[in-house]
Length: 180
Image (cartoon, rainbow, N blue to C red; front, side, top):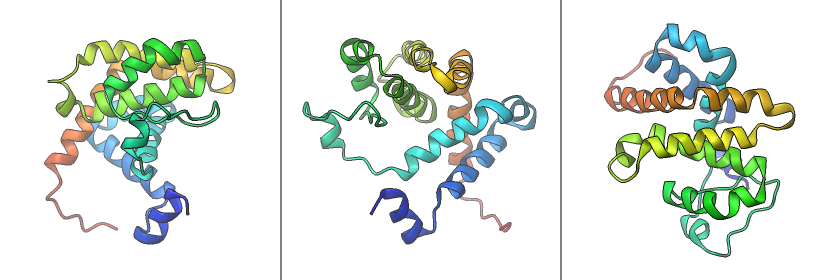
């Protein structure tokens, strides 16, 4: 059973619900004015990145194994920012695989953006911001070229938005919402 079906059957979490959750909370966290500037372009993409990661189960031992080698058409998983930097220097740039580059950029959005509070004392966020931007530029090919370039252009801003979203969710975690 795929992980998406597992969450759907067990918890009632569908891809659509996950996307809506992240989009609505991102909208709340950054405010209507900034959301209106990105909602039609990269805002939904950012929400989909977060939705993707919350619906994927990941085996960290497999990701850290030297034998882990996903296919060219698979979304590559990364265990942490250090692994992205190591592979960026060796494998990613030589592979010239746009999907892997997007994956690396998305993981940087997650680790250096959404989990920035946890990572800023261990990693240079500015270094990873520049790396994430480059990842998206290398992923800018074919029909997704415009979207990838758009994410690359606003990468620093998106890291900040995701850090704000994390803070917003931490601050509002005890609020009970009656709307349904």
